[in-house]
View 1 (cartoon, rainbow, N blue to C red):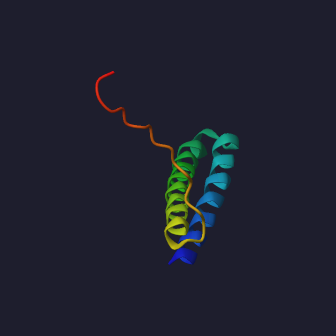
View 2: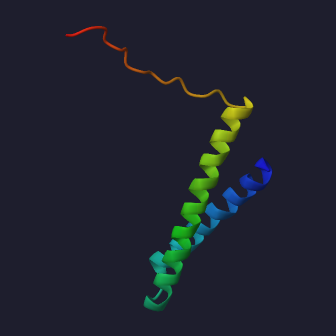
Length: 77
């Protein structure tokens, strides 16, 4: 499953860059569809990338980041 999501991630980001370029350089009739497809590519790419990060941390392939939590104060200040 992780390999399928990784492939989806690459394809989505490729679509984002390709359609983003078309949205920036296209004519008026091409801008809106290219912009929508670029936004869809960015959304799918981010979702797939976050899934891959969570999956790699859960399986032990990547070490989860250390998170600092504030110390609780005991009693009134």
